[in-house]
Structures are given as C-alpha cells and as structure tokens.
Image (tube, chains in turn green, cyan):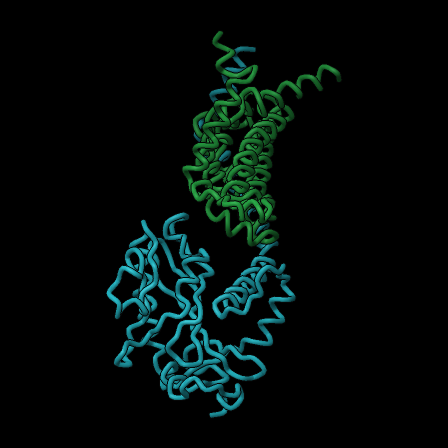
Length: 211
Length: 250
C-alpha cells in the first residue's frame, strides 16, 4: 500500500512538475494562449482538459491489449474526441456563457498534443489506474500553468481577479493603466516564456539536469 | 508461450479483427455521444432561447449594467419591453405571421413604442452570422447591434461580438441627406477617416477581418432593403410615440 501510494505520488509529481506538459514538454501552447485572458475561462478549460486527459488514459489503457496496433491512433482519437464532445455538450448545457467564450477551444482539446501524447507514451504501456493518474497529473500540470498565465493576464490586463476588480481606484487615479498587451496573444507569450524560464531554472529544471 | 503470443499478435492485426474492433468502438462511442446530446438537448434549447432574448435586449439597450442577470430577470425585462410582431410587404405591422411577412420585434415602455428590432441573418466568412439591429422610433437611427451566433475566426472576425464593435453602431443613420436608404456599413479601418458625409453610415472596421466586414455590410444592406417598408411607416410618424395596440390595430 505504502509502495502504491509513493508510486502514484511519483507519477503525479512527474506530470505536474518535473515533466510539466507546458513548461517542460512545451505542448498545448495554442490553447494556453487563447483561453487565458480571463481566469474563469482558463479554469473551465483546465477542468475540461484534466478530466478528458484522465478518462482517455483510463479507457485507452483498459483497451490496450485489444487495440490492433495498425489502427491504434484512430482508436485513441475516437476515444478522445468522444470524451471532448460529451464535455462540450455538458458545458453548453450548464455553463453556456463560458462555453460561448471558449468557443472552438473546447473542441480543440481533441487535437491538444498533451492528451494524444499521454495516450501514446503512457496509457498504451501502463495499467489503467496508473494511466488515469498520469492523465490527471498532466492535466493538473497544464492547469497550473494556465491558471498562472491567466492570473497575470487578467490582473495586469483588466485589473481583475475572476472578474472582480482588485486594483483599487486610487492606483488608477495615480496614473496606472491596464496593460493592453496582456489581453492580446503577445502578452501570453511573454508570460509563458517567463514561466518556462522560471520553472526550468528552479531545482529539478532542465538547466540543473545538464550540470 | 512465445508461439501463443505470436498467434495472438497476428490475430489482433488480422483484417476481420481490425474491422470488428473498429465497428465496436464506433458503435460504443456513437451511443455515448448520442445519449449525451439527446439528454442535454432541452437544456441546450433553453440556453439558446435565453441567449437570443439576452441579445435582443442588448441590441435594444435594455440590459441593466453591473447587475447579475438571472434567467428570470431577463425573461421579465423581455416580457415587459419586447413584442414579437410581423410586417407584411407594405410595412403594415401584423400580430400574426402570414405567408410573406417579415419577423420583427417592437420595443415598448408602458405600451409606448420606442423603436423596433430587425433580425439579421447573413453569410460570414466561415458560416452564418445571426444578430439583431435595433432602431429608434424615427426609423433611421440605429439604437444598437448585437450578434448571438457566428463562426468567424476568434480574435479577428470573431471581434464582431465584442462590446466596442457593437457599441460602434449606436447613433448611426441609415438614410442620407436626400432621405435615401444607404444602410450602415463596416469601414476599412476607422470610420472617422471616411469623408465627412459618409461617417454617419459607417462603423469602425476590425483589422484583419476585411471579409467578415464586407459580408456583414452586404447582409445589413440586404436586410434593411427588405425591411424598408417598415422603416417608412416609422418615419411617417416622425418619431412620435405610438401606442403599441394602436400600431397593431392600424
């Protein structure tokens, strides 16, 4: 049992931090640029992706002995696409406004390299429980970066935190202005770049690995 | 053992197995998707209707700002201020639809007609653009514009649903100095760079979305030409307020 727990912990740490999908594997950048103007959209996107990553890992791993290797990518995509469509349907039913703002990006989870990457690299070779944890871990790793980017973009770009204005009026009176660039894609590039740099210069990052 | 593994592998890649496996996977997942879609359909429809109503109210500038909008609240505002009516080809306002009538919405406060809203449905770059264009009771001043469904490129043509673009339409005129219909179009760049006599008929364009703008301009012109008889009826009243029921009974 102890052994099992530390095993899962290992998978989690690897997915969330050590081999973080955005900061280390540099996957999923497209959506990280697109949905991080506001924290609310980034949060919904994060939850959606984490769940799809976890369950696609679980399903693909359970089928791994049955999937013929020559059609395995198509089968993996079918599983992923179905999960994404179901997620999109649920969002449209219960979070209509946010689903409108996310527009095509929920659908684009299908082509998000993180998910297919985990299916190929992990789920096909490991048992369902491990694959589920791995999917969730990578989803959380993606979510962590997404939320950090969204936090800075929303704070600096619109002076808000989850849609609530947090920068007091007197700061604006003193001449502070929202940074327009943060609302646009370049702002996201800068922040993702800084985060990747920060992550990889911390202990355990690439720059330490090489030494 | 290795023999068994070998035969297992070749069976897994045999054509029959591959076809059956593919069919089974397709069947299972299509059932999953279909059931999700069917179960959630009523909710989707409810959301869509509410979204349309919200957009109608937005075009008519009837949505209170800085207030949490509950579905009930939107419904109440809609019920007290909007009336769905039809107009025959001569512009006569009718209660019921007839074969060739056009749909429109009247904006009223305490039964006094304040203006009308025309549904817009035009081609865009990637698909249909649906929205509403609201007019004041004078039949020539645009009161507001809103888009509730489109498939334009996010960040480029998709900007048509942003607040600044929609606010842009307020106060524009669809008639020129000679009282001729000129519609309202999307400029290339800022409308203030246009010749002075055109500024009233152009709104600021979206950079990087020239085609979306062009299609939307064409669509607006087409729709406004269609609804011109209705606008003429309003213009004849010279913006004086009319009672809702009188207008319907005329």
